[in-house]
Amino acid sequence: MSPGPSFDLLETGRSVRGNNEAKIIRDEVALPELSVADRAYLQELPLAISLDDSLVVHGGVDPRKPLSEQSPEDLVEMRSHECGGYDGPFWYEAYDGPMRVFFGHTVHRRPIETRWAVGLDTGCVYGGQLTAYDWRERRFVSVPGRLPEWSRPDDEIVTPRKPYAARHR
Image (cartoon, rainbow, N blue to C red; front, side, top):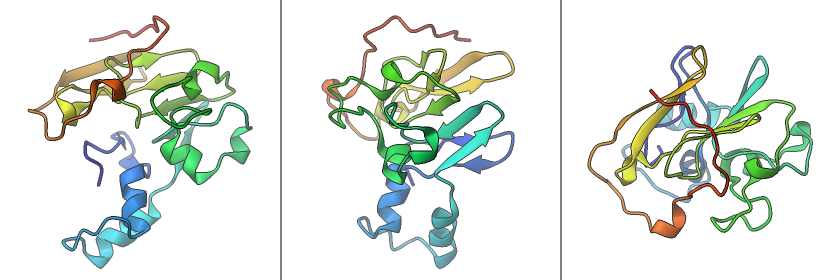
């Protein structure tokens, strides 16, 4: 129920709960077209999925806390561990493991990759790319998005401060 494609793990057919799904669960957004089964599905979505040495979340993690102490809000809505918004510093700039975290939620002009974090949200619904990560080949795969469905101010699209490596196809 996100404004863009949910982060589906195509290999396993699993998704994680995002901030828009959380808003529906908390009755902050009404979608009368959702059935009881649809709402139950959203409530059953995990906040995180652990895969070997990686973690998949929608938002991020608070680098000041161990992974076992992350709150649901951290996993679903984290951008900046200091201010919560687009002003940074961003959580992935300070995070140093131990698990590699794949995340969306924060729109970037291009995907980012650090040793410990992989950011995939490149603003597909705002006219950007739809980006995935091929973990076997360790590279990004991006395709053009459709026409923008929503608008987003430029100051809410992050241009990373560091030249993060991004291997593209």
